[in-house]
Image (cartoon, rainbow, N blue to C red; front, side):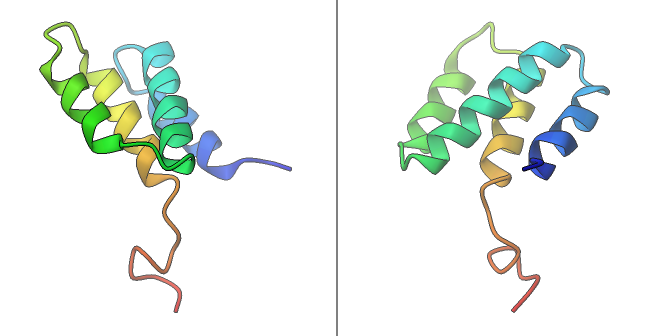
Length: 77
């Protein structure tokens, strides 16, 4: 089965300063959200670390967003 969200993330990563970091963070954010982990704590730790790149932050956010349904975004009813 094709994973559309991951394909979109791969496309977005092409404009990122570090494609590998973006995709790694995407996968981590997505996995943590799907498993019901405390993603807010993860986010705060990422933001607090001085060496966290913009690619990591963007990838993590995209990963979190990929777990949301259209209904949660106000789309399909």
